[in-house]
Amino acid sequence: MDSQLFIIPYIKLDKNLNSELLAVADSVEAELLNTVQLHSTDIVESTHLTRKRLKLLRAFLKLLNKCVEEDSLKQLNSTFRNWGQSISELRDVHVHRMIILDTPTDYFKKSDSKVLDKILETANQQVEQLENRLVFEDEIFKHLEHQIYNHSSLRTFLKSNNFDSECILEGYKISYRKSYRAFKRAESSKLPGPFHEWRKRLKDVQYQSALLRSNQDRINVSAQEVEQFCEALGKDQDLNNFIHWLGALNLNTKAVKEWLHHLKKSQLELKKQLIKDGNRFYKQSAV
Image 1 (spheres, rainbow, N blue to C red):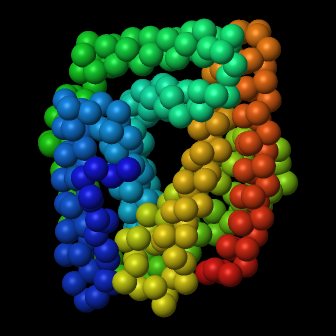
Image 2 (image 1 turned 180 degrees about the horizontal axis):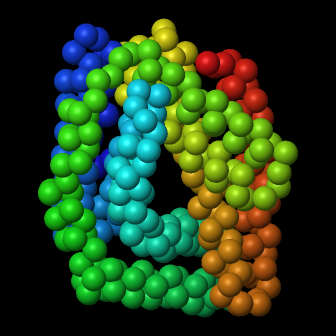
């Protein structure tokens, strides 16, 4: 949940397009700095929102793919990707703990309560160890804050190029088509990788649809609907990671085996619903 109530800026695609793009980039980078600074009071929320803002910046860049030489975007994209990856492991352990805490206590019998306590203790230990290493020892958020504050490459890039509405709309169409191809691969696969790739490609469409929401008649996609899709795909990815993590603990008790069976069954049902909804979505919103 976005505690900062940040509203994604939008691109009108009018005659002052270059100025618009600069304003959007400045707004998102300022918000990114805010979310990183939030770590001093709420590490969990800061980690979550920082990754979201970086994904938004990368989706923004991909809108410009057809406006400039692709190589000129690679370094910027790599920078934002690397910043996000530096805290991805922290996000994973936070999610593991969240799933455990959200598990109904009556799911486990009283005799199995110690098993759940042990799993939660392990998750808490991993969170504490990783936060101590990344946040307090490596000072990853302080380094990120410094890098963002001194980052001028995006502004330089935008000021050095000219953009037009048609190439931006073409960039959006490319992202949409990539998401559709990723969906078709996920539809024909039972493996987690293709679903994760579909989510990443659809996440680009989600953020780009929000950025272009004042041009709804030209993109034919609802940002709100795509966001709901991405949330469901995110839940699938979280379940996949948690199932792998829980299995790796090697707690071969009946309660854990039943829990894993329940989680896998829930994930399978979720995947079936995602495929069903995906077919409907791509049929209705062909770009």
